Image: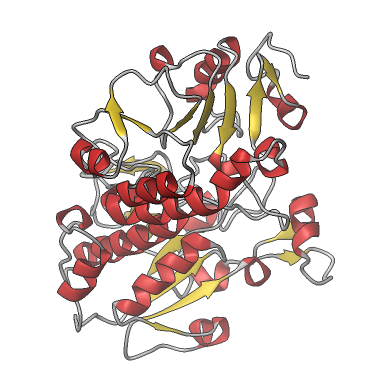
Length: 394
Protein backbone atom coordinates (compact mmCIF):
# COMPACT_ATOMS: atom_id res chain seq x y z
CA UNK A 1 0.00 0.00 0.00
CA UNK A 2 1.41 3.44 -0.88
CA UNK A 3 2.31 5.67 2.06
CA UNK A 4 0.21 8.70 2.82
CA UNK A 5 2.15 11.52 1.19
CA UNK A 6 -0.12 14.50 1.89
CA UNK A 7 1.05 17.61 3.73
CA UNK A 8 -0.99 20.09 5.80
CA UNK A 9 0.90 22.99 4.22
CA UNK A 10 2.53 23.16 0.80
CA UNK A 11 5.81 25.03 0.25
CA UNK A 12 3.83 27.90 -1.31
CA UNK A 13 1.62 28.20 1.77
CA UNK A 14 4.69 28.24 4.01
CA UNK A 15 6.33 30.95 1.93
CA UNK A 16 3.25 33.17 2.20
CA UNK A 17 2.90 32.61 5.94
CA UNK A 18 6.55 33.46 6.56
CA UNK A 19 6.15 36.65 4.52
CA UNK A 20 2.99 37.70 6.40
CA UNK A 21 4.10 36.79 9.94
CA UNK A 22 7.65 38.01 10.56
CA UNK A 23 7.98 36.30 13.96
CA UNK A 24 6.91 32.93 12.60
CA UNK A 25 9.29 30.02 12.18
CA UNK A 26 8.24 26.91 10.30
CA UNK A 27 10.06 23.65 10.98
CA UNK A 28 9.47 20.82 8.52
CA UNK A 29 10.32 17.27 9.48
CA UNK A 30 12.55 15.46 7.01
CA UNK A 31 10.68 12.98 4.85
CA UNK A 32 11.54 10.95 1.74
CA UNK A 33 7.86 10.15 1.20
CA UNK A 34 6.00 13.49 1.24
CA UNK A 35 4.58 14.67 -2.10
CA UNK A 36 6.67 17.85 -1.73
CA UNK A 37 10.42 17.42 -1.29
CA UNK A 38 12.49 18.69 1.62
CA UNK A 39 14.29 20.96 -0.83
CA UNK A 40 11.04 22.60 -1.92
CA UNK A 41 10.38 23.53 1.72
CA UNK A 42 13.93 24.85 2.17
CA UNK A 43 13.53 27.07 -0.87
CA UNK A 44 10.29 28.39 0.66
CA UNK A 45 12.22 29.54 3.76
CA UNK A 46 11.45 26.65 6.12
CA UNK A 47 13.95 24.92 8.40
CA UNK A 48 14.06 21.21 7.61
CA UNK A 49 15.11 18.96 10.49
CA UNK A 50 14.36 15.62 12.11
CA UNK A 51 13.55 16.67 15.67
CA UNK A 52 10.47 18.90 16.04
CA UNK A 53 10.78 19.50 19.78
CA UNK A 54 11.54 23.20 19.12
CA UNK A 55 8.05 23.72 17.72
CA UNK A 56 5.14 24.92 19.83
CA UNK A 57 2.43 23.71 17.45
CA UNK A 58 2.71 20.57 15.34
CA UNK A 59 0.60 20.15 12.20
CA UNK A 60 0.07 16.74 10.63
CA UNK A 61 -2.53 14.89 8.62
CA UNK A 62 -2.87 11.29 9.79
CA UNK A 63 -2.52 9.99 13.35
CA UNK A 64 0.91 10.42 14.96
CA UNK A 65 2.54 7.15 16.11
CA UNK A 66 2.41 6.99 19.91
CA UNK A 67 6.20 6.78 20.42
CA UNK A 68 6.67 9.96 18.38
CA UNK A 69 4.26 12.13 20.40
CA UNK A 70 6.07 15.02 22.11
CA UNK A 71 4.65 15.89 25.57
CA UNK A 72 3.16 19.30 26.38
CA UNK A 73 2.72 20.41 22.76
CA UNK A 74 -0.30 21.45 20.71
CA UNK A 75 -1.10 19.01 17.91
CA UNK A 76 -3.43 19.36 14.94
CA UNK A 77 -4.33 16.18 13.03
CA UNK A 78 -7.22 13.83 12.30
CA UNK A 79 -7.28 11.75 15.48
CA UNK A 80 -10.21 9.49 14.50
CA UNK A 81 -11.27 9.16 18.13
CA UNK A 82 -14.47 11.21 18.43
CA UNK A 83 -16.66 8.25 17.41
CA UNK A 84 -14.79 6.05 19.93
CA UNK A 85 -12.91 4.27 17.16
CA UNK A 86 -11.41 1.22 18.84
CA UNK A 87 -8.16 1.26 16.90
CA UNK A 88 -7.20 4.71 18.28
CA UNK A 89 -8.17 4.28 21.90
CA UNK A 90 -4.56 3.83 23.00
CA UNK A 91 -3.56 6.89 20.97
CA UNK A 92 -5.98 9.16 22.83
CA UNK A 93 -4.91 7.69 26.17
CA UNK A 94 -1.29 8.51 25.30
CA UNK A 95 -2.20 12.05 24.18
CA UNK A 96 -3.92 12.70 27.52
CA UNK A 97 -1.10 11.13 29.51
CA UNK A 98 1.45 13.32 27.73
CA UNK A 99 -0.61 16.46 28.52
CA UNK A 100 -0.92 17.28 24.83
CA UNK A 101 -3.45 19.80 23.58
CA UNK A 102 -5.17 17.84 20.83
CA UNK A 103 -7.05 19.86 18.20
CA UNK A 104 -8.91 17.66 15.73
CA UNK A 105 -9.38 19.06 12.22
CA UNK A 106 -12.70 17.23 11.96
CA UNK A 107 -14.09 19.36 14.80
CA UNK A 108 -13.09 22.78 13.44
CA UNK A 109 -16.47 24.27 12.53
CA UNK A 110 -17.93 27.66 11.70
CA UNK A 111 -20.90 29.43 13.25
CA UNK A 112 -23.26 27.35 11.09
CA UNK A 113 -21.83 24.12 12.48
CA UNK A 114 -20.27 23.08 9.18
CA UNK A 115 -16.69 21.88 9.01
CA UNK A 116 -14.13 24.49 8.00
CA UNK A 117 -11.36 22.22 6.81
CA UNK A 118 -10.90 18.75 5.46
CA UNK A 119 -9.96 16.66 2.48
CA UNK A 120 -13.59 15.96 1.63
CA UNK A 121 -13.61 17.75 -1.71
CA UNK A 122 -10.71 15.70 -3.06
CA UNK A 123 -12.05 12.55 -1.42
CA UNK A 124 -15.14 13.16 -3.54
CA UNK A 125 -13.11 13.78 -6.67
CA UNK A 126 -11.00 10.64 -6.32
CA UNK A 127 -13.92 8.59 -5.01
CA UNK A 128 -16.04 9.37 -8.04
CA UNK A 129 -13.14 8.65 -10.38
CA UNK A 130 -12.52 5.30 -8.67
CA UNK A 131 -16.24 4.55 -8.81
CA UNK A 132 -16.19 5.01 -12.58
CA UNK A 133 -12.99 3.00 -12.86
CA UNK A 134 -14.61 0.13 -10.93
CA UNK A 135 -17.79 0.28 -12.98
CA UNK A 136 -15.72 0.21 -16.17
CA UNK A 137 -14.07 -3.03 -15.04
CA UNK A 138 -17.39 -4.50 -13.83
CA UNK A 139 -19.18 -3.74 -17.09
CA UNK A 140 -16.19 -4.45 -19.33
CA UNK A 141 -17.04 -1.31 -21.30
CA UNK A 142 -14.17 1.11 -20.59
CA UNK A 143 -10.82 1.33 -18.81
CA UNK A 144 -9.52 4.16 -16.64
CA UNK A 145 -5.91 4.22 -15.42
CA UNK A 146 -5.35 4.53 -11.65
CA UNK A 147 -5.50 8.11 -10.38
CA UNK A 148 -2.05 7.60 -8.83
CA UNK A 149 -0.51 7.51 -12.31
CA UNK A 150 -1.41 11.17 -12.88
CA UNK A 151 0.21 14.28 -11.41
CA UNK A 152 -3.08 16.05 -10.80
CA UNK A 153 -6.76 16.20 -11.68
CA UNK A 154 -6.13 18.38 -14.72
CA UNK A 155 -4.09 15.57 -16.31
CA UNK A 156 -6.90 13.08 -15.69
CA UNK A 157 -9.55 15.26 -17.28
CA UNK A 158 -7.33 16.03 -20.26
CA UNK A 159 -6.64 12.33 -20.77
CA UNK A 160 -10.30 11.31 -20.76
CA UNK A 161 -11.93 14.31 -22.43
CA UNK A 162 -14.51 12.95 -24.83
CA UNK A 163 -14.47 9.40 -23.45
CA UNK A 164 -17.57 7.57 -24.65
CA UNK A 165 -19.47 6.24 -21.64
CA UNK A 166 -21.96 3.36 -21.76
CA UNK A 167 -25.53 3.87 -20.56
CA UNK A 168 -25.80 3.55 -16.79
CA UNK A 169 -27.38 5.39 -13.86
CA UNK A 170 -25.54 6.66 -10.79
CA UNK A 171 -26.98 7.79 -7.46
CA UNK A 172 -24.73 10.19 -5.54
CA UNK A 173 -25.63 10.94 -1.91
CA UNK A 174 -24.55 13.99 0.04
CA UNK A 175 -24.69 17.75 0.05
CA UNK A 176 -21.25 18.72 1.36
CA UNK A 177 -17.77 19.00 -0.10
CA UNK A 178 -17.47 15.27 -0.75
CA UNK A 179 -20.56 15.18 -2.93
CA UNK A 180 -19.61 18.47 -4.62
CA UNK A 181 -16.23 17.05 -5.64
CA UNK A 182 -17.81 13.83 -6.85
CA UNK A 183 -20.44 15.68 -8.89
CA UNK A 184 -17.80 17.81 -10.59
CA UNK A 185 -15.91 14.73 -11.75
CA UNK A 186 -19.06 13.02 -13.02
CA UNK A 187 -19.97 16.11 -15.03
CA UNK A 188 -16.40 16.51 -16.32
CA UNK A 189 -16.52 12.91 -17.54
CA UNK A 190 -19.62 13.71 -19.58
CA UNK A 191 -22.28 12.28 -17.27
CA UNK A 192 -25.44 14.38 -17.13
CA UNK A 193 -27.19 15.33 -13.90
CA UNK A 194 -30.95 14.69 -13.73
CA UNK A 195 -33.64 15.24 -11.11
CA UNK A 196 -34.75 12.59 -8.63
CA UNK A 197 -38.11 12.30 -10.37
CA UNK A 198 -36.47 11.78 -13.78
CA UNK A 199 -34.00 9.29 -12.35
CA UNK A 200 -36.75 7.13 -10.86
CA UNK A 201 -39.26 7.33 -13.71
CA UNK A 202 -37.16 7.34 -16.88
CA UNK A 203 -34.47 5.39 -18.69
CA UNK A 204 -31.90 7.32 -20.71
CA UNK A 205 -29.80 6.95 -23.84
CA UNK A 206 -26.69 8.24 -22.07
CA UNK A 207 -25.08 7.90 -18.63
CA UNK A 208 -26.79 10.07 -15.99
CA UNK A 209 -26.56 10.73 -12.27
CA UNK A 210 -28.73 12.17 -9.53
CA UNK A 211 -27.30 14.03 -6.53
CA UNK A 212 -29.39 13.71 -3.39
CA UNK A 213 -28.97 15.87 -0.30
CA UNK A 214 -30.43 15.06 3.11
CA UNK A 215 -33.78 16.69 2.48
CA UNK A 216 -34.26 14.41 -0.55
CA UNK A 217 -33.08 11.30 1.28
CA UNK A 218 -34.83 11.46 4.65
CA UNK A 219 -38.46 12.01 5.62
CA UNK A 220 -40.12 12.37 8.99
CA UNK A 221 -42.14 9.35 10.05
CA UNK A 222 -45.07 11.60 10.94
CA UNK A 223 -45.10 13.30 7.54
CA UNK A 224 -43.89 16.70 8.73
CA UNK A 225 -41.26 18.53 6.61
CA UNK A 226 -37.56 17.73 6.89
CA UNK A 227 -35.71 20.22 9.11
CA UNK A 228 -31.92 19.93 9.24
CA UNK A 229 -31.53 20.81 12.93
CA UNK A 230 -34.37 18.49 13.88
CA UNK A 231 -32.89 15.63 11.85
CA UNK A 232 -29.53 15.79 13.60
CA UNK A 233 -31.21 16.15 17.00
CA UNK A 234 -33.87 13.47 16.53
CA UNK A 235 -32.66 11.13 13.74
CA UNK A 236 -34.87 8.26 14.99
CA UNK A 237 -37.90 10.33 13.94
CA UNK A 238 -36.81 9.97 10.30
CA UNK A 239 -36.64 7.17 7.78
CA UNK A 240 -34.89 6.77 4.41
CA UNK A 241 -37.19 5.58 1.59
CA UNK A 242 -34.31 4.55 -0.65
CA UNK A 243 -35.93 1.63 -2.49
CA UNK A 244 -36.89 3.66 -5.60
CA UNK A 245 -33.22 4.64 -5.90
CA UNK A 246 -31.63 1.20 -5.48
CA UNK A 247 -34.20 -0.20 -7.92
CA UNK A 248 -33.07 2.26 -10.62
CA UNK A 249 -29.33 2.78 -10.05
CA UNK A 250 -26.42 0.75 -11.40
CA UNK A 251 -23.75 2.61 -9.42
CA UNK A 252 -23.89 4.26 -5.99
CA UNK A 253 -21.44 6.85 -4.67
CA UNK A 254 -21.95 7.55 -0.96
CA UNK A 255 -20.83 10.92 0.37
CA UNK A 256 -23.23 11.40 3.29
CA UNK A 257 -22.01 12.08 6.83
CA UNK A 258 -23.56 9.38 8.99
CA UNK A 259 -23.81 9.07 12.77
CA UNK A 260 -25.15 6.21 14.92
CA UNK A 261 -28.92 6.47 15.09
CA UNK A 262 -29.30 7.92 11.60
CA UNK A 263 -31.43 5.95 9.11
CA UNK A 264 -29.63 3.51 6.83
CA UNK A 265 -30.05 3.44 3.05
CA UNK A 266 -30.96 -0.22 2.83
CA UNK A 267 -30.77 -3.43 4.84
CA UNK A 268 -29.18 -6.81 4.29
CA UNK A 269 -32.63 -8.21 3.57
CA UNK A 270 -33.31 -5.59 0.89
CA UNK A 271 -30.04 -6.54 -0.81
CA UNK A 272 -31.49 -9.99 -1.47
CA UNK A 273 -34.60 -8.71 -3.25
CA UNK A 274 -34.82 -9.13 -7.06
CA UNK A 275 -35.34 -5.38 -7.52
CA UNK A 276 -31.98 -4.39 -6.01
CA UNK A 277 -30.11 -3.13 -9.09
CA UNK A 278 -26.89 -1.53 -7.78
CA UNK A 279 -23.80 -3.48 -8.85
CA UNK A 280 -21.00 -1.13 -7.75
CA UNK A 281 -20.78 0.93 -4.55
CA UNK A 282 -18.12 3.56 -3.91
CA UNK A 283 -18.39 4.37 -0.22
CA UNK A 284 -16.37 7.55 0.21
CA UNK A 285 -17.51 7.96 3.82
CA UNK A 286 -16.10 4.51 4.65
CA UNK A 287 -18.04 3.95 7.87
CA UNK A 288 -17.64 0.27 8.69
CA UNK A 289 -20.72 -1.93 9.10
CA UNK A 290 -22.70 -2.49 11.22
CA UNK A 291 -22.20 1.10 12.51
CA UNK A 292 -22.67 2.56 9.03
CA UNK A 293 -25.18 3.81 6.50
CA UNK A 294 -24.36 0.87 4.19
CA UNK A 295 -24.25 -2.78 5.30
CA UNK A 296 -21.94 -3.57 2.38
CA UNK A 297 -18.92 -1.68 3.76
CA UNK A 298 -17.36 -4.56 5.66
CA UNK A 299 -13.91 -2.98 5.82
CA UNK A 300 -11.76 -0.16 4.52
CA UNK A 301 -9.70 -0.88 1.44
CA UNK A 302 -6.35 0.54 0.43
CA UNK A 303 -4.84 2.27 -2.57
CA UNK A 304 -3.64 -0.43 -4.93
CA UNK A 305 -6.11 -2.97 -3.50
CA UNK A 306 -9.25 -0.91 -3.64
CA UNK A 307 -12.12 -3.32 -4.28
CA UNK A 308 -13.73 -6.29 -2.61
CA UNK A 309 -16.81 -8.25 -3.56
CA UNK A 310 -19.91 -8.43 -1.38
CA UNK A 311 -22.21 -11.44 -1.69
CA UNK A 312 -25.75 -10.11 -1.13
CA UNK A 313 -27.12 -13.59 -0.40
CA UNK A 314 -24.72 -14.38 2.44
CA UNK A 315 -23.75 -10.85 3.53
CA UNK A 316 -20.07 -11.81 3.38
CA UNK A 317 -16.99 -10.74 1.46
CA UNK A 318 -16.03 -12.49 -1.73
CA UNK A 319 -13.50 -11.94 -4.49
CA UNK A 320 -14.13 -8.77 -6.53
CA UNK A 321 -15.98 -9.06 -9.83
CA UNK A 322 -17.44 -12.44 -8.90
CA UNK A 323 -20.72 -13.10 -10.74
CA UNK A 324 -23.67 -11.96 -8.65
CA UNK A 325 -21.60 -9.89 -6.20
CA UNK A 326 -21.70 -6.17 -5.52
CA UNK A 327 -18.27 -4.61 -5.92
CA UNK A 328 -17.33 -2.20 -3.13
CA UNK A 329 -14.66 0.51 -3.26
CA UNK A 330 -14.03 1.80 0.29
CA UNK A 331 -10.56 3.36 0.36
CA UNK A 332 -10.09 5.29 3.61
CA UNK A 333 -7.48 7.78 2.35
CA UNK A 334 -8.72 8.64 -1.12
CA UNK A 335 -7.16 12.14 -1.34
CA UNK A 336 -3.72 10.54 -1.17
CA UNK A 337 -4.20 9.42 -4.77
CA UNK A 338 -3.86 13.11 -5.78
CA UNK A 339 -1.74 14.35 -2.85
CA UNK A 340 -0.43 17.61 -4.33
CA UNK A 341 -3.90 18.81 -5.33
CA UNK A 342 -5.41 17.70 -2.03
CA UNK A 343 -2.65 19.29 0.05
CA UNK A 344 -3.03 22.54 -1.87
CA UNK A 345 -6.71 22.97 -1.02
CA UNK A 346 -6.30 21.80 2.58
CA UNK A 347 -3.32 24.11 3.17
CA UNK A 348 -5.16 27.08 1.69
CA UNK A 349 -7.90 26.82 4.32
CA UNK A 350 -5.44 26.01 7.08
CA UNK A 351 -3.27 29.04 6.34
CA UNK A 352 -6.03 31.55 5.50
CA UNK A 353 -8.75 30.61 8.00
CA UNK A 354 -7.42 28.39 10.79
CA UNK A 355 -3.98 29.94 11.29
CA UNK A 356 -5.36 33.40 12.22
CA UNK A 357 -7.62 31.69 14.78
CA UNK A 358 -4.58 30.02 16.30
CA UNK A 359 -2.93 33.39 16.89
CA UNK A 360 -5.87 34.77 18.86
CA UNK A 361 -5.55 34.84 22.69
CA UNK A 362 -8.84 32.96 22.80
CA UNK A 363 -10.46 31.31 19.79
CA UNK A 364 -13.88 29.72 20.04
CA UNK A 365 -13.19 27.83 16.82
CA UNK A 366 -10.03 26.24 18.26
CA UNK A 367 -11.57 25.70 21.67
CA UNK A 368 -14.52 23.77 20.23
CA UNK A 369 -12.14 21.47 18.38
CA UNK A 370 -9.87 20.78 21.37
CA UNK A 371 -10.44 17.22 22.56
CA UNK A 372 -8.09 17.41 25.54
CA UNK A 373 -5.48 19.61 27.18
CA UNK A 374 -3.41 19.64 30.37
CA UNK A 375 -4.00 15.93 30.81
CA UNK A 376 -7.81 16.13 30.81
CA UNK A 377 -10.68 15.81 28.37
CA UNK A 378 -12.46 19.08 27.65
CA UNK A 379 -16.18 19.33 28.59
CA UNK A 380 -17.41 18.91 25.03
CA UNK A 381 -15.59 15.60 24.75
CA UNK A 382 -16.24 14.32 28.27
CA UNK A 383 -18.34 11.54 26.72
CA UNK A 384 -15.02 9.91 25.77
CA UNK A 385 -14.19 9.30 29.45
CA UNK A 386 -15.28 5.67 29.42
CA UNK A 387 -13.49 5.22 26.08
CA UNK A 388 -10.17 6.11 27.73
CA UNK A 389 -10.95 4.37 31.04
CA UNK A 390 -9.67 6.17 34.09
CA UNK A 391 -8.96 9.61 32.62
CA UNK A 392 -11.23 12.36 33.91
CA UNK A 393 -12.85 15.30 32.14
CA UNK A 394 -12.71 18.94 33.20
